Amino acid sequence: MTEEIIDKGKPLAVVSYLTIIGIIVAYFMNKDKDNNPFTNFHLRQSLGIWLTFHALGIVVSTLDYSTVRLVFYFCIGVILIFGFINAVIGKAQEVPLVGKFYQKIFASLGN
Image 1 (cartoon, rainbow, N blue to C red):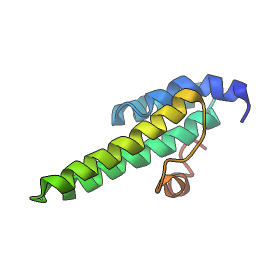
Image 2: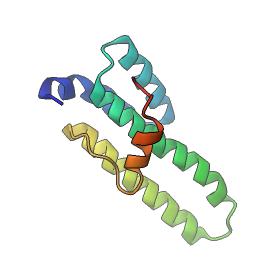
Image 3: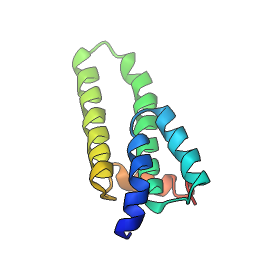
Image 4: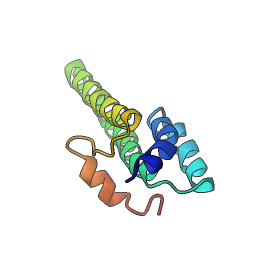
């Protein structure tokens, strides 16, 4: 990706990490504008993180072990911050452990 593509897509890429609503806003604004590949990359990453958070959060919340919940929230937080920082600095780098999987299953998002 060129610097121009990254610079144009950076604001919406950052918004996509803020909340699940941020993903929806960034998706539709990106579709209306120019369907930026940098934004699409980060949309796939953030969608995967947020869906994982909500899906696993339901399971983890039923557990009686506060340590497990703490580790879960910490791991999701680290992955989310990693993706957010990459969006801010203009890098299209996959999040650790699950980034390739998110890119694969959400490949049609933004195309």
